Image (cartoon, rainbow, N blue to C red; front, side, top):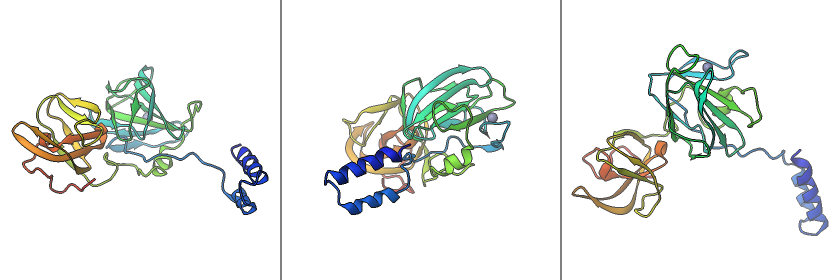
Length: 253
Ligand SMILES: [Zn+2]
């Protein structure tokens, strides 16, 4: 379906003298595919049930409260109660596919909210028809799909192998923030948008750090900022609970 209009466009361009005839080689190009996206691990845990004819997704089991992350960038299209699931979230990604999350005890996103890949969206629970805390994760080809595809190949095509480790599998280190009303900004600048505010000490996974605006607070001065993918932004290293201004073992962004 996609190739026909492209061919017509190319033919029209050649006819108009906009393209040399050799550009007809574009005819041999494969049909345009959705671009996909850079995936993130939806949750750490044990795969307790895979995808099969009687199970439309994959089950990832872990402790109640385990963070659940968006598998990719997109828009929340469903967030609320659901029979069977107890609660569910659906995210429409930028490549047109949809991921679905079920059984969580806490939802942290609402309909129409934009989320980044790896953003914290919920915490694992055992709501609905469930025998223990786990994430039921589905992947759909579009919003009109009624049958989930196998999440294994879907995620691996986007760089995530199951079971997975949140943080995108990239090197990183876990820290805890300190202080109250700590702002997470879209970039390492004081005039960058605030994407989150941390009310108190928060466990965070830092995947990289970089130099940005000099921050003076709490008796410290520091121009280093930590990138926290799950929160979609940067925190001044002043608020990372570590004595060093530049965190050891964390790469430069
Ligand atoms: Zn399931």
